[in-house]
Amino acid sequence: MALVTTKEMFKKAYEGHYAIGAFNINNMEIIQGVVNGAKAKKSPVILQVSSGALKYAGPKYLKAMVDAAIADTGVDLALHLDHGPDFETVKLAIETGFTSVMFDGSHYEYEENVAKTKEVVEYAHARGVVVEAELGVLAGVEDDVKSDVHVYTDPAQAVDFVTRTGVDSLAIAIGTSHGAFKFAGEAKLRFDILEEIQEKLPNYPIVLHGASAVDPVAVATCNKYGGDIAGAKGIPTDMLRKASSMAVCKINMDTDLRLAFTAGIRKVFGDTPKEFDPRKYCGAGRVAIQATVEDKIANVLGSENTL
Ligand code: G3H
Ligand code: 13P
Ligand code: ZN
Image (cartoon, rainbow, N blue to C red; front, top):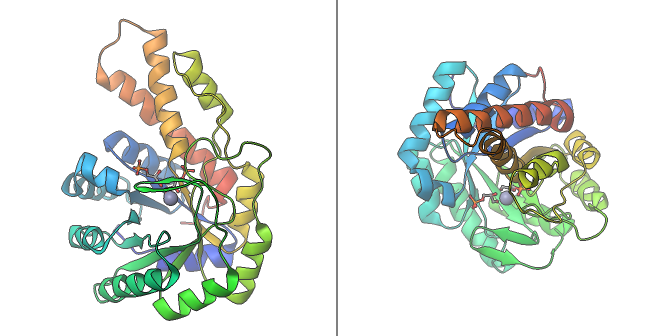
C-alpha cells in the first residue's frame, strides 16, 4: 500500500500489451470514483493533477486525499503532475510528494525543450521521481498552451530527445487532442508514426494525451438534462485499444470523467428538482466516474486483473 512511481507499472504494461489509465483528479468524489474503479477491476492507475487542479484544490488537500484513498483501498497509486508548465511547478509537485511529473516543453523550440526537460530530469531523478515529457503539438488547449494545428512527432527527433534528456516516458502527437471536440470529420490517428517510434525506441513507454472517447451517451444525458454540448467527438475505442497493445503505456483521460460527472449530477437535478443535498448529486457523479473508469480498464486499457 503505497504511492509508487510508474517505472514498474510501465514495464509490466509494455510486456503485457496493455496501458495504464491516467485520470485527472480535482476533488474528493473524482479521486474516490477513480480509485474505487481501479480496485474493483484489480488494475493499477495513475492519478494526475494539472496546474489548474493544483490551484483549484491545493497541493496539500490533493496529496492528503490521495493518501487516504491508498489507505482506504489498499491500491498502489502513482501521483503525477500533468502538463507541468515550468520548473517551479515541478518543484512544488515533488516537494508535495508526487512520484511522477510531466514537464511540457512541447511549445518551446526543440533545443529549448531539450535543455529545460534535461534540467527537470536531473532534479527529479535525484529525488526518486520519474519524468514524462512531450514532443510534437496536440491541437487544442493544454492549460495555457493553445494550438490550432497538430505538429506530429518526428520519430528520429524522438530518439534524439529521449537519448539527450534521459526522460522516462514520452508523450507523442499522432492525432489525438485535448477536450471534447477532437475531429471535425472522420477520426484518424497516425499509427505509422507510433510504429516507427516503437521500432526506433524498443521497450520505451509512450504516452497518449487527449485520449478521451467522448461517450455519446454521457453527452446525450448532459444535453437531455439542460446541457448544450454540440458536435462532441472523441477517439474511437478500438483505436485506443490498438495503441494500448503497442508501445503506449499511459493513456490520459480527463474529458470523459468530466462528462460522466456532469451527466450524473445533471440527471439528479433533472429527475429530482427538489433535491439540494450535495451528497445526493455529488454521490451520483462519483458513481458515474467509477463506472467510466471500470469501462476504460476493461475495454480500452486492457489492464483488468493485472495487480
Ligand atoms: O490536459 C488537460 C487536462 O484535461 C487538464 O485540464 O488544465 O483544465 O485542469 P485543466
Ligand atoms: P482528454 O481531454 O482527451 O480527456 O485528454 C486529457 C489529457 O490529455 C490530460 O493530460
Ligand atoms: Zn494532456
